[in-house]
Image 1 (tube, rainbow, N blue to C red):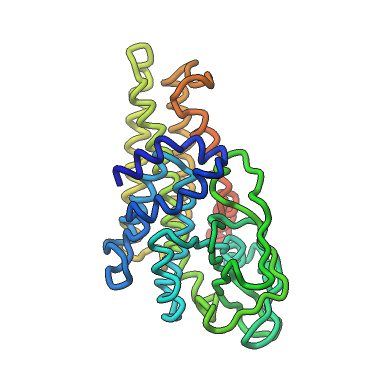
Image 2 (cartoon, rainbow, N blue to C red; image 1 turned 60 degrees about the vertical axis):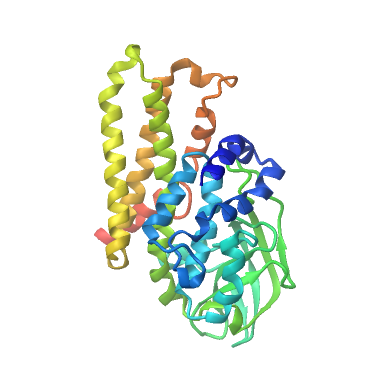
Length: 349
């Protein structure tokens, strides 16, 4: 992990700005460091531990680069899908390359999570009753590096229940766009996918029943995602603490309060994943995601105030400008804060 920290500190800005060499090297760096194996059973090639340990690993990466943590999250979420899948053949074929960082796993399930909440229809459809032919478009998927597989929720035109499939990059009919022109996290290999007459069969299925699989996968999808906010907020609070001098001592109390809130929210995420409460109480996890997004905004504000005018200078090696750009992503990553708030309102009603 020490070597990975050093590499991330050196390349954080390059990853944010979309440097091609850093972007292409990132997944291999994550693989060689061993972090992709955290929370994966040893019997499956992992390092053991819990899903909470994986959240902490993503948090540690996010302290240094949200781009790297976002890619890490996508890869680790895809790995979790395979661990939850009844398709042992797919898991045995795909898991070694994913754990080593030789192959990329893209979640592609943002649309599916909105579908699960009744917010969207599925963007990909299947003709046939198995094998199937896929048609559709994925407007946003992350970690679309070389040799990727993308997890997709698929509606069936034969009237059967929606399914979850893992579609490889080299399958005929899969077209990747160029990287999306983002304002930050540009090295995350985020692009759109078009599927035209793409053939799949049962060997490609993560799960034949999307409505059964998605609620089981959602705690991991969202719980691992919490590591993005935890790491970014912690980095900003650490920077604020470092720059807190006598002239800004008035910030001491709010800084301590922000640190306490972040610690409390981290504990709540880890406890909920450990005891399984989020499987039966999704709103509790939604509220934590919202609270952590607020923690990020409070932390960045404190970092700005503690750093003063230096934070506004591009020639200062503070990292504040990068973290400020990164923080704009937290409220909109699927499910966005507005979607979570809508879900909570619906649950309350």
